[in-house]
Image 1: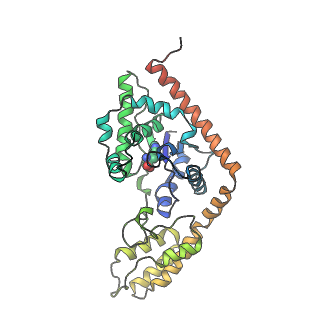
Image 2: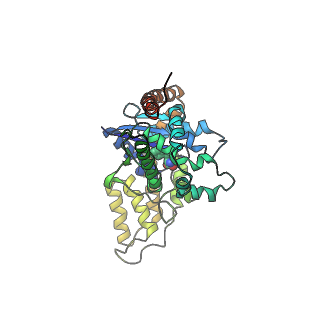
Image 3: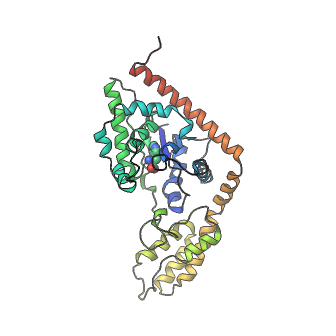
Length: 331
Ligand code: TRP
């Protein structure tokens, strides 16, 4: 089994796009690998130095990932700040991380633009903390999205550099975890592009959205005036509705509305009503599970404690080795 590490930012609720994009794959991934999943609360301080509800956000993310199927028996699920060994490795890696290379990171440059009054050292060294997160468990693989490719490249650089500088072959050089063909892109409800919480109100359906909110969002989804020719090509907003339907509805339902479209008889109102009900049914078990978990602090504490214990066991072993390699010694 390969060691895989993945960090999750404690921001926002899971939407259908996250579910089909990341979470579903995480569940499959932790069946087949020795996975560490952690909630990156240290990282969140780089953008929110005095967060209002840090604990609440961490709890919500933990609850939602568990509700979506992450299994604490199969993977090590922990909170980053419960494993202070990470910060020691971060400090040590920072000694061999150079201003020039850190300044060149695209996400850093973006942050400079977004928060010009808070260009803190944590932001600059975000990639070294990320490298520490991963190599502290001597991971072979990291599942990262397109936006994290440069950070992955930095991890590889820091791991390689450590090995070279201290003349050891200690850290494996992590590579991207490849999900293969299984990545489904879920479109948003505003007619263009994919589902995302930054794309505007109503574009994303969150798994915890109550049924009436889901109905409202789906009924407001962008459509057009309808097909005028038989078997006409579907423009993007319409194709998007069909794509959504294909992940939550039965094949018969999709075929029924597809035929209606092709015959120019489709009534988008009817299609949306059915789509809304199928989204509600699909997400219902998630909502129930999340509600149950939210009120079970005792269980959440157990999960987090067990995760922290396992993660610390792995991390402290690495730190012990690293200290020895660098040359820290008792008298
Ligand atoms: N930077 C990642 C993100 O924004 C979160 C993250 C932090 C992470 N540390 C990591 C991801 C280590 C993978 C491995 O999504």
